[in-house]
Amino acid sequence: MGQSDFLVCYQVAVQQQQQWNAWGMGRFGGMGQATSSTIDNGTLVFDVYTMADKQQVWQGRATKTISPSGNEQKNLKNMQNGINKLLKNFPPPAKN
Image (cartoon, rainbow, N blue to C red):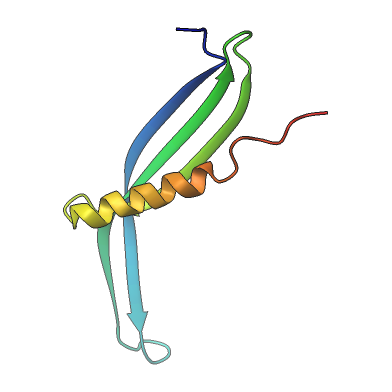
């Protein structure tokens, strides 16, 4: 088997954030309500380096709100769509 030309690295992270939804009616002391919920944001970072000199030649990043307790097939489809979108600009154009 021959020597590889590129090294591919990836990182995946999930971060929880608070999301606030608020509504109100009336002016100056009208009624209103606010609710909060926790959402999970997933990020995938994809880096490509040359093997010869370990120089980064490309980086892609995709972020999506995910639902760990939600529909597994929908989560997998969202993940695949994110990867496809991330890689649509790969490979980078050749430098002259």
